[in-house]
Length: 65
Image (cartoon, rainbow, N blue to C red):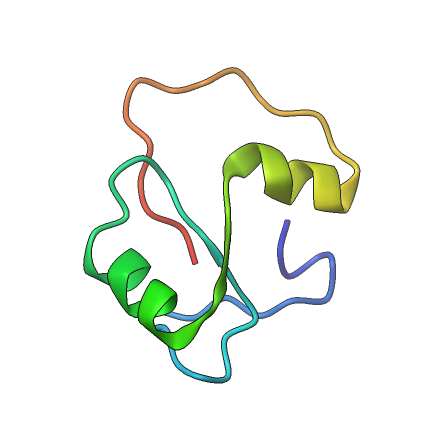
């Protein structure tokens, strides 16, 4: 979805990161993003940004970048 919308997916957070798509247990990447002032998006905010409807929630949600 992110790539289809023209974005990049990375495995780390840096000052060049525009948004972090964070799940329920985002961990250290969430902390780093907050420290760098990166905008944190929930799944709903992300889907709203793309104009999509959310999929049914899975049992365990992983951290996404």
